[in-house]
Amino acid sequence: MIHAFAPDSIQVHQIQRGGLPTLTQLLSADAPRFALSLIAVGGVVWLITYLAALRTSHRERVTTIPLAAVCLNITWEVVHSIVYPPPRQIDLYTNLAWLGLDLLILLQIFRYGRARQTVAQIRDYFAPVVIGVLVLSFVGHLTFHRHVTANSIFPDESGAIPAYLINLVMSVLFVSMYYQRTDGAGLSKTVAWGKCVGSLCYAVGNILVLNRLPTVTYEVQVRAAGAATWVPAGEVGNTTIHPGFIFFLFAGIAIFDIIYLYLLYFGPRGSHRAPAPQ
Image (cartoon, rainbow, N blue to C red; front, side, top):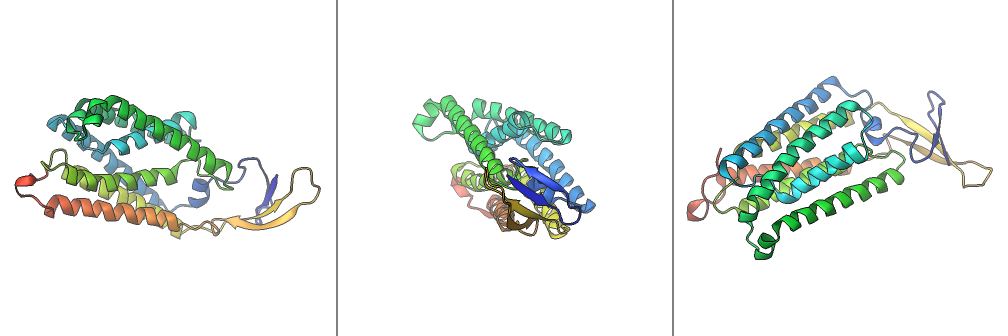
């Protein structure tokens, strides 16, 4: 059992797997309106990106987003909208909307993905491979979520950190896909720009939020089960949460998105690579 005292309000929280603010609540306290608007713009840009990816895939009859990234996205959305619904309804509806779009992209992967496989075994068993990646992704998301919520004072219940990890994985896979698609099929500059700009909006918006946080601290006491004495365990709050890993994710995403754009415009062409479609 843990007691947490907020020094300003002297309000006591009995923590049983929580009780204190979640990570998202703690790090978004009094967020600047401009920062929230920038994050919303990022969401709109990502929506345009998804629609462009669906259009390109349908037009060229080829997948436009890497398989592993799609499986990670879908299973993240299932976990954080159905298995563990977010507390705010707007977040629930947003996650479900992204799930619907990703399911359409998954259908295109089943329809067009087999023909692009260069490994015979994967081509022959393409559907089981996709299902296997989905299962592994779901189990990974589920166990990771349970781990971080059970072992964190400020749990990441919204799944923000794994979402940015997926974004970084997607950025790396796009660069890999560029070198695999020697004919340039499915390599859309619109998708590349949309992903880069949308992710930058999210990153800059979140950085503005993190840099303008009011100080929120809690004095924590702990007591072993069955013991009578509470022992001071120091202070926790947004000043004890170091966002370095979040900044690393933002930087990694931006770097690989820029590399992908550079390759689309200035990468090797010639007889082994056609110009990327718009």
